[in-house]
Image 1: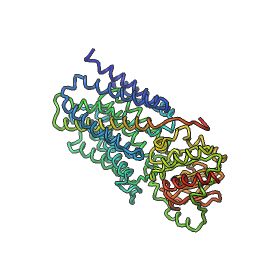
Image 2: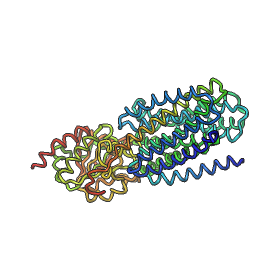
Image 3: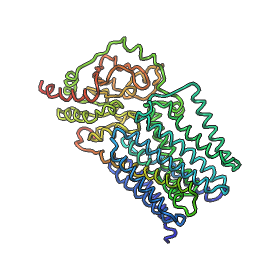
Image 4: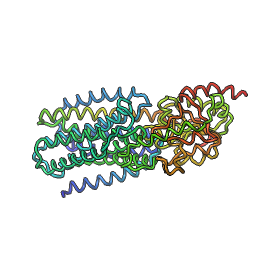
Length: 461
Length: 100
């Protein structure tokens, strides 16, 4: 029984992992889902420690302690606005572990390797190493250690594809067993370099798709490890993870009306620098915080549209104050969240939850879009392309066809923005020149707080 | 193809389809916690890392790789689960005026 305990432990672990994702589907059971996931992981680890192949423990426990000592403070001290970059960092560690295990296993098996195991190990290490460096790069861009704008050069896609093809070719060579000793290290190095090059042309606005894709790769690396070690638990957990990342990246691509290839090879931020030039000529209506406060407190219903700019300005707590004040004055306040708002899927929801805004006020695009026509005020904070009406009708616009939030249909649109500079895609936003649009120029946090200050006066009037 | 390999492929496809079904049902509200949770789950590669680090006769290379892999996977597990829980703690449904 004890000799076989790990079989049972793995079955329990697999069961808990499935349950964990199932419970995550609703905020009511989501925390139970995390518990289930933790219990599953515990069974997986204990089961493995009891296997007869595991005979020395000092390096294992040293690794556990060191990992926990690094991981726990990282997770507990992280500010909520940094969730995207820390998720990327966490991906990097997971992918590194998968890649190193693959490397060690390759050298352990040596000449005894079968073609199938060899192929699984090659896939595992390829995905592991490229996800590792790509995630580190994504972390760097999100943390602004590396320039966030897309970095492109002539023939970039050709270089990337050639590199990937070379890595794949050497990988196949390694699988045949006829490759010389330098082949595997060269293969690993190519995978590492490819990860870096993959992220260079990615702009900030494409990060949600890319992070989801890296999530999927990390899962596939774990599943490949399962094939190499003939371990069903790894296959199940890896496949679940890969499916999840895949769905999220498809959702993100659809929300931008773009294809995978376009996100990965399109370097979106590079388009049409000339479009911004014509912006200055047209008149816009701007308003003060006092004007805004008056309009907001007189409204029956207000829909707030947050974007990445809100996260940058850390305006979510002030926004909560504004919401509370307006609700007190019997204004109905709802939030409309575009799927790609922010730097990772669901980013805005987490920030608004952090500011203690109840989640039944947060609505996804398809659920709330019809209600803009009935809204007195749409208040846009730090969002740009996701509210650009050009996406609906201007066939020449690079974002034509992208589903947007129909804020322009509200009676009054207010946009808090630093200046008229176009967003990440460099596209001018015609919304700013509409007759029903008021521009509120300033820092999101400072401006919202001025509106809140101006509110009591507006209420007394 | 051996039956073991065949079985593994069946398991992979069934798990992937189960994953697609389950994740489709997750509300976009929770997409960030979902990614963070699946991120922690992908650290299941700790199993492979432990097997490498604890093997009886291992070269120094294998031992070192195993140790670093256990450390990295543990960082991923601990950080992944803690961050997910921190986020989910914040989601609340109160003062539900208007729509519920």
